[in-house]
Image (cartoon, rainbow, N blue to C red; front, side, top):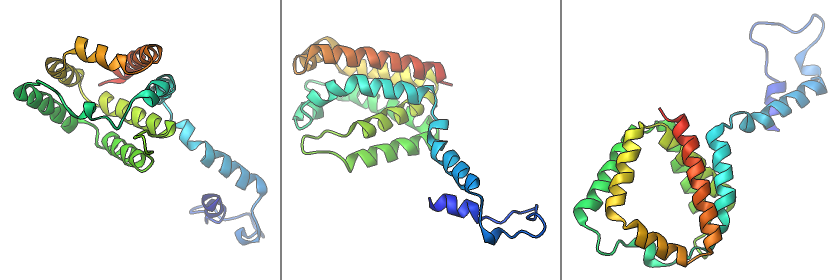
Length: 197
């Protein structure tokens, strides 16, 4: 509302008001309503395919996300991982991060920081924060060359034994929810890849 009031009292730079009228004697209600509509619609106007896909991914995978025990230490360790291979993952991730668009990277950092402020006692974040994070990550990944993403993916595949880890992690949650999340993730990946430079 402050923005609408400021807009209504903004003096024109080049065009004076009609003769005999003063800007200080009131503003047409249509001006205020129109300004409010434009300002209120701005965020949706900037949504794109990645944001839309992030919303779909988030809604489809949130039930799965809620089933994960985020307080477990299983997510903080890589048993029997080769340290040199772990460093390769980190190196490739840093190279990819250095190539990211700085505005997209900043949005990602801010989305994560906001979510951290909303973590509940089970380590879970609200759906809007999760959606913002997914959208930010999508834009971050879309801002780097595909080969850098593939380098990170391949290096991580050398560290994590997908068959063992995937089966174990899936056994901890509802398999239907895990499969829905997996399917939604690959659909999201396709949208991000299509937008990638």
